[in-house]
Image (cartoon, rainbow, N blue to C red; front, top):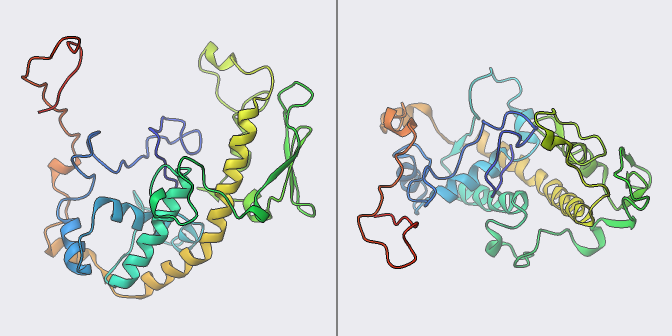
Length: 291
């Protein structure tokens, strides 16, 4: 499971399956959470404090945003969507939300929940501690060509991209996977000399002649983010175990509370806001104002 502050297209995540996207809000102006009606109210009563859509989103990230989640539910019969156990324990709920907010902060490169992270720098992508940060020791693309291969040397903890080298990359970071996809290899596959993408239009043939320096920065950002996620995983696995073995909000609870089944109106696409009846001022004839 991955999280993004961007608008994903059909190539998001694996390069396929981009349609499996769950937005936090049903409306672009954040006026209607994309949450089953009544669920936030039930969670608020259960945990004794206001639970927002952002809290629930973070809780899902804390529970499911790590490799221990698919391993735990691998034997569960396949069904549509993700299985998210909802704890009844207020203290456990709060800790999962805290960890989930950090998970989303990392996944979104600091674009969400950054103000709550003690090691966050405004406007900067998340970083490992200085002594653990990856370092580019040989520039990528020095031969003025796009590289066509990427490899990893575990003894020296070095990623080689063509003739370039990045050191201080742990084996766990190199092999980090989401949905079975090795993240670093997938990232590179879209940027190598012959990208691993289906040619759909002549636009696919428009590629940089040389490796942009910005891509090296992006790769370092990615390695930092994966390193932070690796550090977080043991805590997430422990919390998932604690939630799963503790008191849970059950399906029967949701049914008796009128939350399940999900009402039909909540599954339909929301209507766009009506155009304003106000007369636009000078120079604003093309703007639309919501009521």
